[in-house]
Image (cartoon, rainbow, N blue to C red; front, side, top):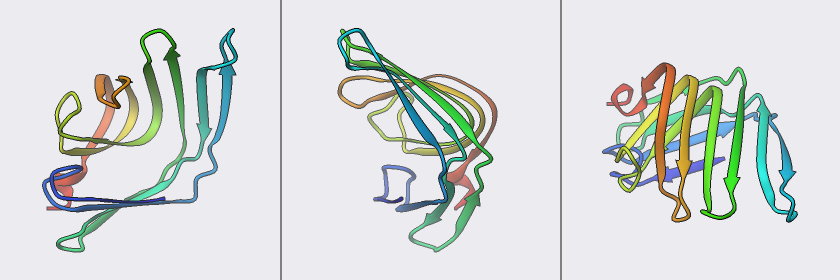
Length: 136
């Protein structure tokens, strides 16, 4: 997995993100209409390396595992996601709170995703590393 984000999206500088080694498994629970209602993903996620594309400075975070549960509201089209464990969260200028920001969490993060793809962070707990600050 590789992402190349231009300046102003993940950080104020161009950010490259690469992930390797995921062994996470996904289980989908269908609603009464046969659509995905709940998605559970668990296991060892990606080891993530974030790189400041302008300077070449990088930071790597090994994943020791995480569990995510996504509940899909079929009427509103909103997804509620709860992730516990090791996870990286990139927020764009259109998200709430507005990015650009990239944070690596060890703990629990809860956010919603509206039908337009806008993330709205509801709560966070545990430890957090501001990846953008670490790479400047």
